[in-house]
Length: 117
Image 1 (cartoon, one colour):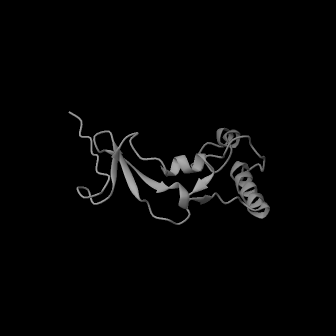
Image 2 (cartoon, rainbow, N blue to C red):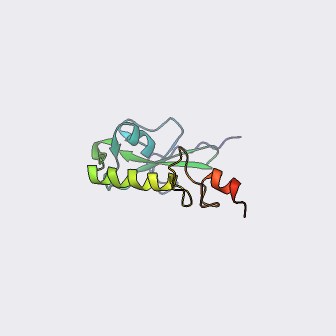
Image 3 (cartoon, rainbow, N blue to C red):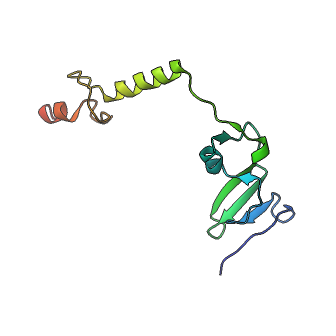
C-alpha cells in the first residue's frame, strides 16, 4: 500500500505537498532550476514533492522568482585551477599526476610503492 499525499493547500501537512510528477506548472526543484541555468535567487521553497512512500522529499521553487546562475570570474576560475593542480602534485617527487593524490598516502602511487610505510 502506498501513501500518496496530495495537499496543495498545506492544511494537512503545513506545507503545500504534491506526489511525484504532480507538481503544478511554474514550480521546479533545485536540480531542474540548475538544468535550466537558474538558481532559487534567495527565495524560500513554496511547496514540496514526496515520493517513495514519503521517504524522499524535494522542495519546489517558483520559476518566476528564480535568478540566473552566477558565473565564476576569471580570477576565481584561475584559483580553482591552481587548487586542483595542487591536489594532483606529489609532495615527494613534485610530479603533476593525471589523478588526484590520495590523501591517505600524501604522495603519488609511484612514490608510495617505492617507500611503503
